[in-house]
Length: 263
Image 1: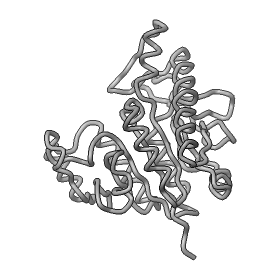
Image 2: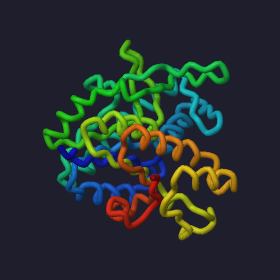
Image 3: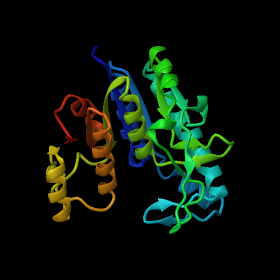
Image 4: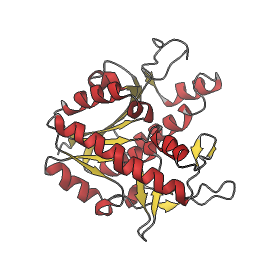
């Protein structure tokens, strides 16, 4: 029996921060006929609010350290303002969306990150076994489009700040048990670039061997490495394909006419 196709689409903080790009992206998203799930990052609003409240933003290797004060702010901004703004814009496009955190309907249970090297604070790590697949299936069968913020919980009353790329990847793997899942990472670049100074140098397909070669040549480095590592991990665990590309080209990404495909 053929599985129904499900698109899981993640938009980065740079899309959230650009009102024109966000509005255009959500117009495109709303026109997709197949079932979709949207996962969004946080953008700069949490950092800006922290400054206004004189709360120091602490980053290590680009990752936010989430103490209790910061957790309050990211929850208000990510699961509140940003999530509901996205849902409202989707409703205006006749896309009946439901805004969610991992705590809602107990959909995503995470564990507080434990590491000897750095104390990240209230940051959550998840795996596909912690996803309530049947609850998400009920939303989709009710013609609702889930919109996930990057906030989860530990099942004991504690909210946790969780990487949105990770949420998208783990949701994709968990839901691939019942759907034909295609995962799209949409951000401000047109794909993985062979030359970072040339927006037109998009690498159309990357397999495992080519990936290792690109890393050795330092064409792929820094923040793109964990994104592509997650992509290969998702494919190994049942996701059909992972595509990385520009938010303005969503239709082309879905129709194999743009972006970088991880095979």
